[in-house]
Length: 170
Image (cartoon, rainbow, N blue to C red; front, side, top):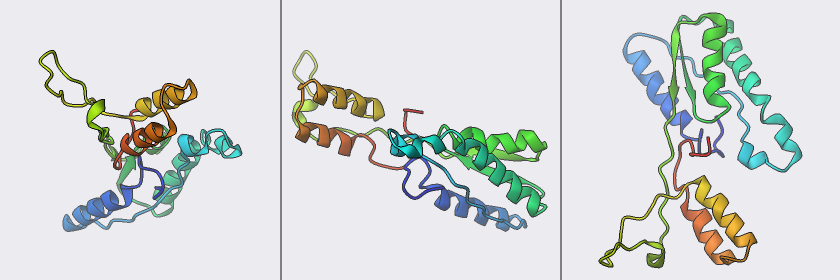
């Protein structure tokens, strides 16, 4: 879990909901938060060297907490290319009874400018295509080639992923 990563920042709320439901059924929930490193936020910096190894660290943390507290069952949450496999790996490694849940996708953004909306043959505005990390990457390239200005790039970056969830870059 990290409050700075949209692919994982809703996990605390989801974990609280799961814990409440487990306790309603007579179980005792024990929440454990693991570290997670973002490729996108660490890209191009020394911090990038920690991203790939974080998958094993997440797996080890989940296994450590589960085994260390003699838990009967386990429910894990994953939401990025590190935490999804890392949340499943301890179940397989230790042959644990439990399940792993996907935190859910991020909904695509929509560009706010009317001129960006496509028109059909009759001139009617079509529903705008959803924007995602691919849109941002294309926009960065367009900016680099002089096809759009910084203001347009900023609009696209601010509109592409408006909420929490795993991005389509996964």
